[in-house]
Length: 342
Image (cartoon, rainbow, N blue to C red; front, side, top):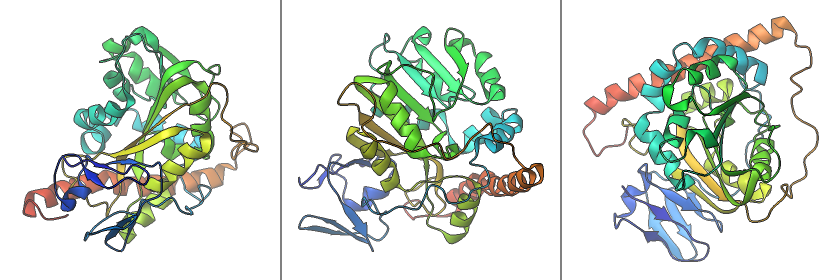
């Protein structure tokens, strides 16, 4: 699998030795110590120019506002969405979007090399990602946090997670002290955060000096119809947005690794619910140097029930599109000759 490392002003290195057409593979790793630009089919880094038919933008540039209206991004909507989705999450969502192979590949940059590490799994849900964590870290040293008691109830039923601490909580206001954990992991949660920057700032705060955060989440599609449903449903960040959030929070050595399901051939037309694993290292102890205002969303504030129902229904309709995407792509993968983008 091709792996691309962009290190500041250094030259482009194809670690695996595969030619530039492999840049679209799921093993692409970007190290954002400096800016790089993938535009209009041309990769520019200093004086290097590589022609490429389908390449993503990875420049650190002005991003879409995270406050753009999305119909299941607020915490109360996400709560009720998972009230029902938790029933079938492990059996319907994971096979199409978040498999064991993807999980293990996405967790690899987190460097879970010591069983005594203290790890927090934020937005841990049913514990699917936590099952990958406890392969490397003792369960008694792992805390699963989620705002959905229905998802956490599923996690509690899994035997390998019996010794994990399981708590309800908010990713944007973590109930952990500063300089608490060796590793912060969050998979499939950032898309529901009303303020992603605040959540990543919290990741910085709770880590010890030298600790590493690993955020696994979706990527924005390029196909117009998929863009529409993605933006109606929840937050599908662009790759450069992840990098900006990490760097603004104070993280160093920020890297992005692309992941994807088996039907994925490196073309992000429809986006991916689990499309990248982003890591960063906390260089100094204490809170993040980033200063933020009040929260975007007050979960205690009363909600108009009719507005809530309207938003919830629209979000569910949009999410149905993304339940069908892997089925459609699986069929295309069987029909379209190997080596051709789908």
